[in-house]
Length: 362
View 1 (cartoon, rainbow, N blue to C red):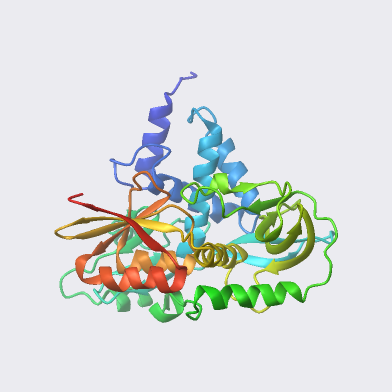
View 2: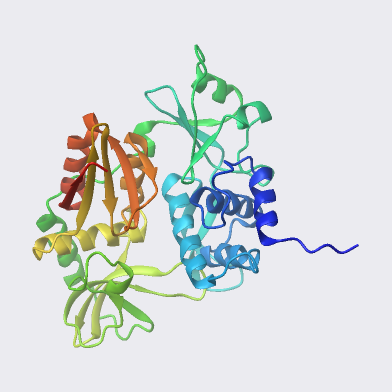
């Protein structure tokens, strides 16, 4: 007998199978998106990000009303999984039989990062389980905005227990490694010097330009065609396979003269990480620094961000604090009162961000 199943029933069943919090039953919930993407990635990886996005959308037809908005959320969730360390990006992967280089997603091996509090972040995945742990340990996993962690039981040495289960331990220092601190002027001057040394690029098809003169609180609206722009700009262009390619280009009346590919040769961080930080430096030097909003109460504060940040910055904020529901912004992090001054200094020194608003009592 054929039975018609309501979309809500399908989602509720999926939530139950993944052992997720019943409060996050919607297909748009960050924890739901992260859990399903991990499961799909376990089967599909290595693959291009577009393959993962397309498969996710195809598997949810009839469950979402606005596929365009859903696609944007899926792309953002994949970015979060890469930032956390569940998925790895491998650049310069040659496709078999084709002279194409692209960015692939690879499932990170099961690992954990011990926190000073005794809890541990769980990273990586496998084709068999999205969280490769025994059932008893898996039931203790807390999934918060795609970040998975386990709190220790009284008297438990959680790190030792996880090592004995075969998970690889990553040090906090290695997992949260950041580039060196540089003033915005020095960072921008370094990129400009490298760009000046590049050979003429010729025409670049499908070029999109990140125009810093546009509204800094709407990241997507800052992207557009070159038009008649003149100057040095962060750019990206699509490719047949894999993620977009990032770069820094000199334009004259919208025509590219030179192009510097990002990331730089030997840089361990991703192209988008380098580009986002470079754009923050460009904005700061132009005296239009990107901003963050602070919502304070007696227990701490919530930092609201309006543009993407490099994965090393996202990891730090997730470790020091915790990611929470964004409120009229791109992403938000809850930070304890005792950590706030240090993290605000980090945002200013490393990302050149300025506090633009301070809302009390939230």
